[in-house]
Image (cartoon, rainbow, N blue to C red; front, side, top):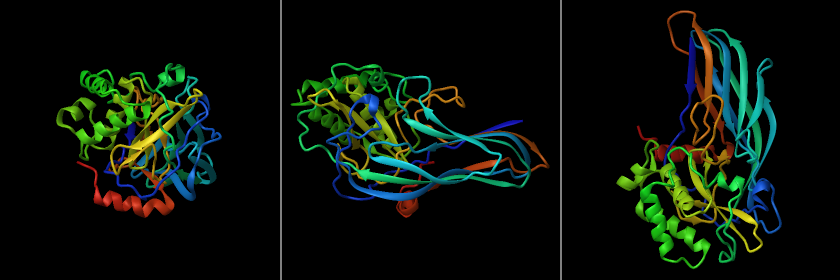
Length: 350
């Protein structure tokens, strides 16, 4: 018997952990996204020890051909990741897999992939990697008027203006109508244009926690959580020929948009659509797990908006009892208490 388990995304409303100003992160080129350049200001960096992994319980089963993947943080201009040690037993084959694969697109997400030959009944197996994460806050640039919408979208930028992202449809009639309406007001510059898209989403969509839905449902009842609000902002940007993408951190997501400076250098800017107002800046020490909203992995047939935990195995019950079970291990160190408090205040919708 082949049993497959896929752990869903933990969902709840986001309140910001801190309230202060941050320095904007930009990048030299789209093709050098993980490199910092002159002019980037990273504010108040903090080093934290965190743990990422998975706990497997065989229960009353003989388990073989065990295969597991977990999301794992990547380096970004505002984030440096250093693996310090791991708790992975001998005999477990493991490696990192960067996504997307098979394209020239730089890595937007990383998975820790693990394979285990077998495990007997009533055993527990913890697979844990400990990392040091240095995360910085980011601020909007002092002069936002100089930025422009890219005139050309090369191969990599087309990844953030094209279609195919689950639940995000920038070709939806209502999305096109709103995007056209905002553009018709003749915003004074590109930054103002994006900010009007941002304000439209915040002014017209009421925050409501719940299961992820297609944006047509969000537009219909004018309600959505951080995923729906982020997805709608991304769609409106793409409908306006502005590259945009989702950014995922534990328990939350927010969008980034892309503009160019007078020298033609591109920069990604974050904003907080669901939560306190942050436009062009981000106030969060939680680790970035991925940037993007369209991933193809071998374990799934359809594109994924978010790369989550995955586990599969062959099982043979030793006697009637419980199936094998898995649970994520995510220890955010000094941030654990704040995240737990947010989860208690805003439990996931049933």
